[in-house]
Amino acid sequence: MSAPTQVRATALLDLPAVVLEAGGDPYPALWTVGVDPAILARADLTIPAETVAWLLDGLAERYAIPDLGLRLAARRRLANMGVAGLVLGQQPTVRAALAMIERYRHLMSDSLSLHLTEANRGATALLGLAIGTAAPQRQSRELGLAAFVHLFRLQLGEHWHPTAVYFTHAPPRGATLHRRFFGCPVQFDAVFDGFEFPAADLDRANPGADAALASYAAALLDALPAQPSGAVVTTVTRLIHTLLPMGGASLANVARALGRHPRTLQRELAAAGHDFRDLLAEARDTLANTLLRDPALTIDAVATRLGYASSTAFIRAYRTRQGITPGQVRG
Image (spheres, rainbow, N blue to C red):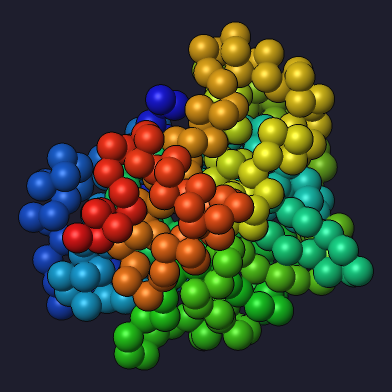
């Protein structure tokens, strides 16, 4: 099993205010999952991503706030991203800012990742969410995707917007902030979570960037505790979760995304006590448990999203690892 992923406590800094504004009471739920509201202002603390997922989706359901994640994102500030977030605005381009996030991910939250593909002057940002359990993920996906859109706006101006946004979950009931927040069409029940935009935006110059300050900030960040051993496992897990819905979570594709030869990556995982096939199987089971809770998805559709050649292969693999069939999970 890979190590549980974490979310920076400050990502939930505005959660109490947002829920109170909607007429709810967030504090019982916070205490129930073991989160002291006082720690939400602590940039040096993290909360398990599983805890955050249950908390957000639970509050959204209880108080009928289907766009809770977006409401949090609308209040988001760089401070919510931890110490590294305070200097992202000094990066010269969006591409440089994304590279910085990857480099200092151990100082922020390791449950989210963004994988870029570019073709025909267009780019697609694929969101990866690695929680590692069957916890609900709707609000975490929306908050995470909105956070990356916020980063683009930090670099390119507050009026920047994607050309299209995609979510794998079903559309919300009632009026929400989705169209207003993203400023573009939002498609639900998609095969991936992410957004599309002109590829040129990745390298547009940030007029507010300060090269000297960015260099100084990087030196400060390098002096902070290094990335823990075994971080390659977390990185690979995030990439698997990112590429899995697109059918691209192979060893070759993950290694290519990391700039490594597949054999090199296999050796690094082995040194950390893990095997790529086991990480892939674990990610498939986690996503399967999430998808199987959606009655609108057939077993065939779930199998396709998990990258299986057929529903038969999916059922056989799931039964071997879980001891029950996907149909039994649905009751």
